Image (tube, rainbow, N blue to C red):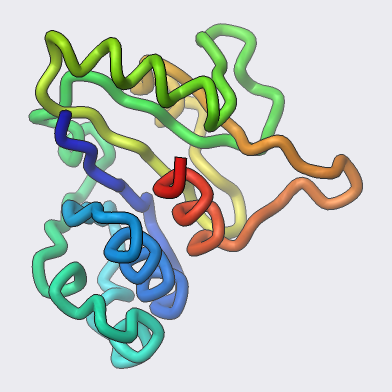
Length: 154
């Protein structure tokens, strides 16, 4: 199954570079960006360090719905407890789920939200499954690049 990484409105070029580096390190190549041009800033390439090909092949979209136009199965990340209307899975639980889905689906996407506020409720509604990395409750937040690495590693 082809897995696309989708970043929604990333604000910092450094975070996009870190995400690209994490993707390349773990063997992923398709990075999609919604509502941002921060990847064009020099800092993205500096942090990507050796992952310029990922940055060079980014596709950009105006909306998350546009970015998911050819995707059959969508997983959205969230650190908030808004998962009451969706199926929820940890990163480890996603692996067998995606392996099973790969038997009949060709393309899936893993969606990451804004650095400061995550995904809106409307954007979360576009997902088939919600996920969040288990964290210590005192500080339940990862840098965007760290979050991409956690999921790409799985």
